[in-house]
Image (cartoon, rainbow, N blue to C red; front, side, top):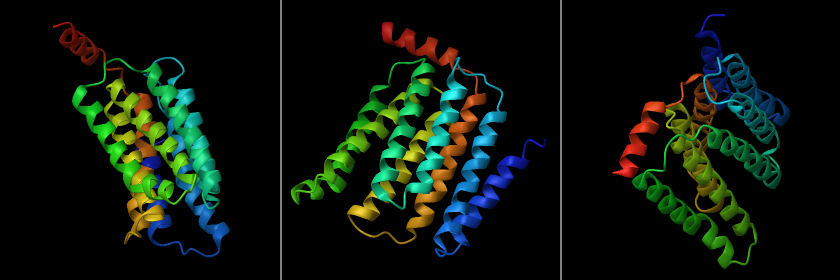
Length: 221
């Protein structure tokens, strides 16, 4: 198979879903939303596994769980819980591939970002006595942990995918709980599909052994 065929199909169906598929009927909208994810899973399965043992299986399982979440996100809590489970699979995969300590600057940035998002999104919910705020905080912790473990892999695709996922979820949370955002669908779904594709592509990246050795030497210095 041509190496560009699947990525091209993912892009075509993703663009079609985001910009051209009407919201009704809902069943057709959901179907078109799932097609890019199904193609991304196929792309992941076809990748030559160069990461540590089990990485490909766990990442592919995470992709499959996220695909289910895409279908049930119309029932928000069900979608939130399912995506959280998908992130747990990504965390497990990235932990297997961790080869470096967390850079202090990156770690500090993620923690600060999490605190800001918790204040913006979960804070008003908690002040109103809405326990959904606790669920939002739990989700923020999980997705930032996913980003944290991705950084520790030294895998550029995994890191970029995790950060894009965090951005996509942040836009969705702000739009739902804080203020409506113009162009929300594109702001959420373009980075979302890109994130899933990059996480799938990370399977074929070689482990960052030289990076790990360099960081280890710096830690001992």
